[in-house]
Length: 397
View 1 (cartoon, rainbow, N blue to C red):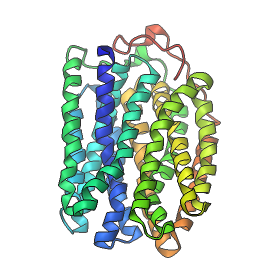
View 2 (view 1 turned 90 degrees about the vertical axis):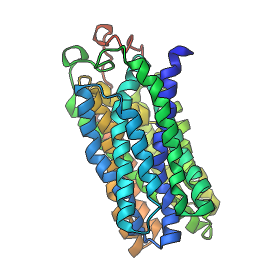
View 3 (view 1 turned 60 degrees about the vertical axis):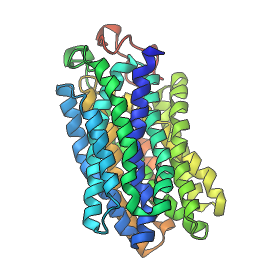
View 4 (view 1 turned 45 degrees about the horizontal axis):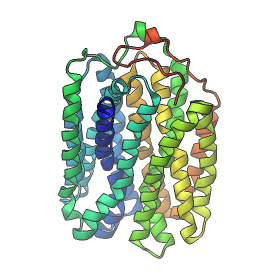
């Protein structure tokens, strides 16, 4: 049990941080209701949370490749929470944008270093990395419930209470940091000579596939609550339920993805998952009334089955730059979806929300096509695995 404690703490801490990624979309209906934001305006809020994160996260990844910076875990967790806590305190649109952007920087700083530390704590196990990703998925799932519990009671003025998960997450980091101190400065990352040869071309194609996933996931995350409420006679609870399902399905998807990949391989599982997701997004947009909810759950599971698999694939394609690979697969390619949200919002303002969301069906199809070009990375030999990473796994899971 003690052996698994670091990855458990990191997983729970990951949940505390990703509450704030999910909180941006969860706040959208409240911005619309209290401040009469248009679709384009709320998509601008999503963009603000994403744009700095998109730029900053790979930079933090490069930093963690050069030196271990474990103190970033508690600091970035608090920044992520502080931004969301401040997002509702002012009616100024500019202040709101700045607050969610601050949260985005916190999220950007957290993920590359946490993935590096988690890789060391996982001892080379893709399954353990899957549990680390699961924590983030659960954080996403809890975001709409957490926001609703606070903001639905007292309005946006109560957003400072949303800082509490960040305080808890920062506290959970401290035992992990103490455990990391005896390790070499670059524990969990292999040097270029020991790690194996980078496959940059495959990594680029993988990143493009994850961008497609990001566009679909962030686009739905920003607008599915409004879409569900629109389909259910304006019920805000119906919208919260849809967003909760979109995030909750990720918990099942991550666990399922690791189990399926152990039998059929990460590439094949990801490929089929994306193909099935295209159909489930179409069902979500076309199903009448409450029938959309099963398709929301299927879409979530389909988008999350490849999630942790893509992180480990990226690390295996760039074994000499684990931090950079983590920063891109967990950060840049995830946040890029936010850059598309204003286009979706503008189109929805001029047509309808269903029309604006329909192009998202193509995103998993493009990801499927890209995955058809990817090879399953060769597993590292035991001599190529660092002492901190432990023995190489017998198969990817």
